[in-house]
Image 1 (tube, rainbow, N blue to C red):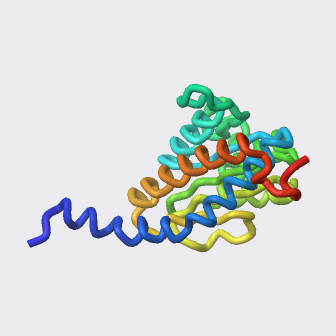
Image 2: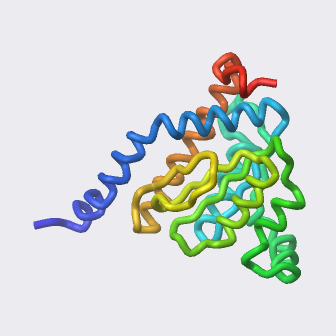
Length: 195
């Protein structure tokens, strides 16, 4: 007889194993992020609903590291500033709110991380497309495959938004840790990532 805990654990096994298989992809994304930070880039994050909270959490992790001795890196969540988000949405429509902010704030050396736990967040896809047009490094944390035209697609491989968020939280903490490893050892960045 399955208990609720057994059922919850079983639903997380596949996505957890898939994340382990994607360790190389996460490491490559972190290396590329570190290269952008090394050249003076900034991190811009965005998402809707729970993913907006995750975008804010990710930006805070970089800007205000909780580990003593870790370097603060410039990061901002485009979802956190209610005045800017609502003002831009009023002017351009909610679907264009993140893309408009990316076009206003983004620079070619910057990093854009869009987070979505389902396929209904067109504004996240549009912002990633705008970031790519600017030459920014683009990273998508998604529930499943299916967001083309980004530099790094890190999929949670789960249709359950709660499980996808759990995997995303693990991914962005791994990104934070690995970015700092690369920043502390710039020789690991490779010649194309260094200034």
